[in-house]
Image 1 (cartoon, helix red, strand yellow):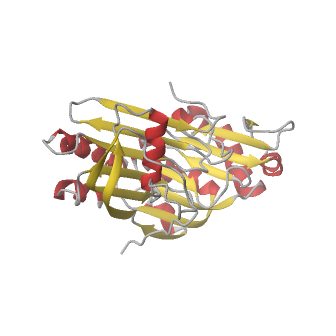
Image 2 (cartoon, rainbow, N blue to C red):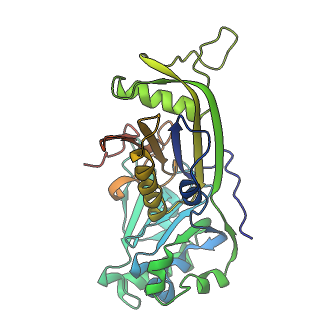
Image 3 (tube, rainbow, N blue to C red):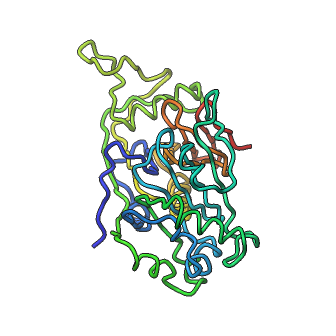
Length: 329
């Protein structure tokens, strides 16, 4: 059966949900939380395998695959991302870029001299069709010159893959050492939780409170605590209980969208709490973030958004990016 990847300090996508005045998730919501799509971890994937003709024609061209190098650090290592729009992005150190010998540009996150370079290729462009000159150049560079290998997380949209002729990633997996994994689900029931009023609280303070709750940090500012002096913003009310749920792994947009739709149905029901929150944290070490812009780690690799949903059908969206990242419009 599919295993879990132990997150530890390793960057993953995580979606976190907070349900005030709730001690257990309704069955329909629990079903969504526990049925996120599985994904694969491929050991030492030769990156040129992502240019395989069959893989391109049955998966990439259908917008079905999502992939990212695993346990690579965007500020130190060579990182690889394959986006569902068919863009292959390589974030390379200077030596690797020069060995590759393919067109790229200096990283936006460089110092006085360029030490990192980004190669971004649209695999769906006609110039990159198998057999064309640009395709053969990149294939040869990855196969014979740089010979880049990386542990790689890979997932696919099952419906879109079926349009490409079925189990379209299986031939690729058959040539590799791989394992299948399920996203990790963690639930915590919180008791006597002080909660600020979302509509009266400063947004930055509210997000800081949400982060403290998600990290399990007390907001009591106890004199015996050496971890944090943070206190819950005012005005606030005490909730007898709340449910905090997180799902971690290589999560697909359609699964997060299903969760969003279920949370909307949940908050529309007459309940004691008038809101719920959903926070989605992207990979801290991904070479790309929102709108395919380059992503840098800087101090913490910030790359997340929080959606607040209220009983009266109103919403608040909070975005957080690194200081040098490009925020989406």
